[in-house]
Image (cartoon, rainbow, N blue to C red; front, side):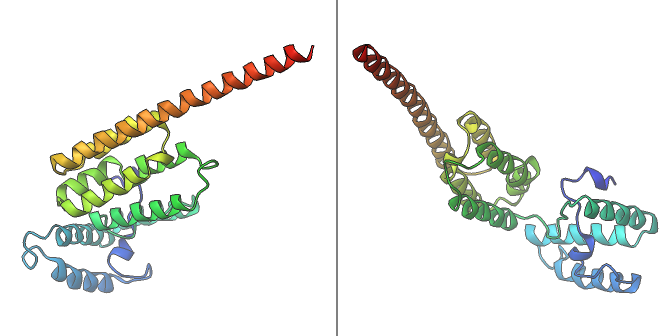
Amino acid sequence: MNLTSRRFMKDYYKILELDVSATLPEIKKAYRRLAQQYHPDKNPQDPYAAANFSAIKEAYEVLTNPAKKEYYLEQRWFQQTMGKKKAGTITTPVTILKDVLAFDRHVSMLDIHRMNKEGLFTYLDRELLPDEHIEKLNHFGDAQINKEIISLVLKNLAVIPAVRFQDVKSRLLRITTDASIKEIISTTISIYEKKQSREKYQLWIILVIVILICMLIFVVSR
């Protein structure tokens, strides 16, 4: 198990609803309680319960194995000293949607003329819709949540650099949804690309006009 290869190191104590000072008996007790709650036999065909059960099982296996636990605690301490956050919650379509909603709220408060568009794209690409999140969305197959996420991303295309539109389109088209939504993705991005192109040419036209006016003023004033 390579804990350092994870995008964010999981907080196994938080997953088991325990303090870091929890003893081995407390870890086992918490595991039995949560495993019983989320066991697949009690939650057939429930992907959310399955995701919780898998994370709980992983946390238990690490924290009850002395060698794995020692390595985990070393990595946990290292990430804390580096200021890196731990993923204390289990990633599901609901948690991904919450993060996208938070992104939408954050963008709404920014000055569009001063925002770091490249930085916002990087956050969208690496934190909100990395490959593992898209795979998670497709695995759960929650059509409504997938549509909401796609809608929110399209809503905020104006804060993404035009050169990144095709990257966003590629990620959104990988999310499982119906054909009509895929058509909306392609059409919306095409509209934004044309708009950006028009605005770029308009700026050049304005610049040329300003230069011509300056030249005219210079000639007339001689």
